[in-house]
Length: 162
Image (cartoon, rainbow, N blue to C red; front, side, top):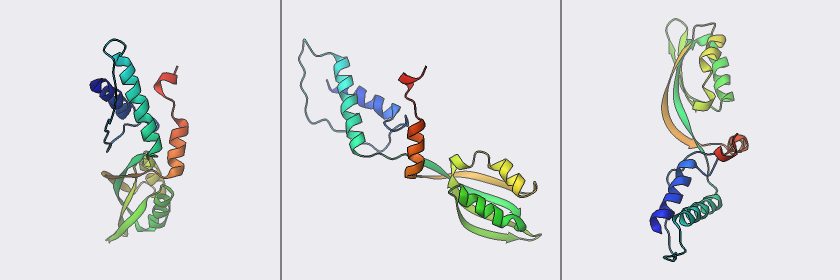
């Protein structure tokens, strides 16, 4: 019965227990179980493994992680205040600023990737087309509770979709 329980647990790991995102950093141990050679079916153990694991995950109060990126913005120094305010509104954090000849600056920041999807057009607007930026993956961080609540509220499991 252990392979069937493992199959159920692996399904939950892939399908996720919070808004359909896969689970990572999880260790599972099965301490007890019984099976009957005639009455026990694999599907029953798969289902039991899934249900037990989902219950355990919910009791553990899981959190969503979101990718953060390192952002390097080159822009006119006169736009620095607008850029810093905009990054702050995107849950970003300015790390450093370097000033360049010709009244330009480079702003180094970290921000959630989810907030940066339309940044190119926003930066062009703030800098009259003179700004540019690059992004590179940095790390994952816990999603703030209010953002996680919004994501969970919008989630519709695959078996409920039409």
